[in-house]
Image (cartoon, rainbow, N blue to C red; front, side, top):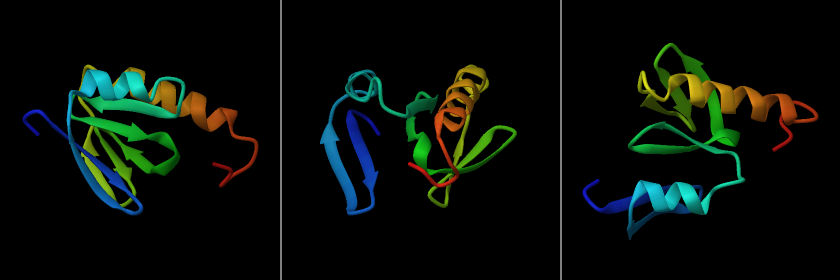
Length: 88
């Protein structure tokens, strides 16, 4: 949203000034992936994927055509790395 980043957390929304590039660098090594240039998704909160949409905590976000393969690959790798269902 312009030069603002809005973090949606379980404690509420946090709005800061920044860029998606810097935000994605801050979360490097954690289970986060860009599903398009507007959304950095916490893979632990993905409820489902359908074609070019991802359900994250009840919100449906669009997956861009360019980011789809990379996003699904990271999601599958993250899911495969979990020891048991529900283990976040």
